[in-house]
Image (cartoon, rainbow, N blue to C red; front, side):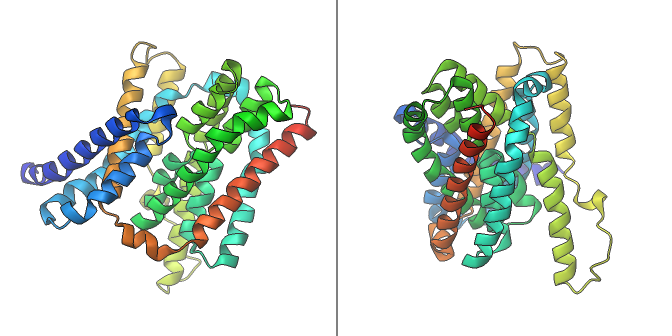
Amino acid sequence: MIEKGKNLIPGLSLSALVAVIAIALSSLLPGDIIGATVMALLVGMALNPFFMKHQQLYSGVTFSSKKILRLGIILMGVNLNFAEVWDVGKYALFLMIFTMLTAFGVGNLIGKFFGVNWKLTNLLAVSTAICGGSAVAAVGPVIKAKHEDITYAISATFIFDIITVIIFPWIGIALGMSDTGYGHWIGTAVNDTSSVVAAGYAFSQLGGNVAVIVKLTRTLFIIPYVLVFSVINERLENKAQGTNHHTPVDLRKIFPYFIILFLVVVALRSTGIIPNALAPSISSASKFSMIMALSAIGLTTSFKDIQKIGPKPMILGFIVDSLVVVVAIVVLFLTNHF
C-alpha cells in the first residue's frame, strides 16, 4: 500500500503543478475569458508530448483524472442549498424540461446524421443541458469515454461560452429582458459556471444572482444523468460482448457512490452543519480538485488525437447550444417570464 502510494506521487505532483500554472495563467486574462478548468486542459495537452513518455507518471496522473475528479464533484455540493434552489428553481425546473429535451433529443438526432459516436454526442448534450465541463467530467468516466472525447466536448463548450459572455448581455438589453428573465435565460442556456457568472453579472446584480441559482439547480441533474448513463453504457457493453440483452444491470457494480457523498455535502450545507465561514474553503478545494483532474485529462490527451475526431462534433455542439438558447428564450416569452 505504501509502495503504491509512492508510485502515485510523481503523477499527482505533476497534475497539481499544471493546475497551479493554469490558475495563474487564467488569472492574467481579463474577464475570465478562459476559465482555469479549460486552461488546465490546454496546458496539460501542450505538455503531453514532453511528460507522458515517462511511465512513472501514468499511475498518479490517472489517479488524478478519476479519484481527484470525484473528490471535486463531492465537495462541489457545498455550493448548493436545497432551500435556495427550490425558491428560485421551481420555474427553472419547468424551463429545463424544454432545454434538456432539446439538448438530448435533437442532439442525438443530429449526432446520428453527422455520424458522431454516441458517447461524444451525449457528452456534448450533457455539457449543454447540465453544467458544462463539470458534467462532462462527471459523465465521461461513467460511460468510459475516451479522454480525447472528453477534451473535445469541454473545448466545444469553452468556445461557445466565450461567445455567450461577450454578446448575451447585449442581446438581453436589446430584447428588453427583465433582470429575473435574463437570469433564468443565462442560468439555463449558458454552460460553464464561470461563464454564467460573467454573463449574468454583466447585465445586473439581480440577473447574476438568479442566473447562478438556476445554474446550481441544473448542477443537481448530474446525479440522475450519471445514473442513467451508467445503465445505458452497461447495457450497450453487454450487447457488444454478445451477452443476452435481457441481462439485468448490476447497479451495485455501476452505481457512482460518490454521488451519495455529493448529496450528503449538499444536505450538510443546507442544514447549516457546514457553516458559512467554512463553505468558501471547501468550495475552493472543490475547484482546485476539478482543475487538477482536468490537468490530468489534458496530460493524457494529445492535440493529434483531437484533430482525428474532425469538425463535425464541434458543429454538432454549436447547433445544440444555439437551439437551447433559442428554446429558452421562446419558453420565457410564452410563459410571461421574459
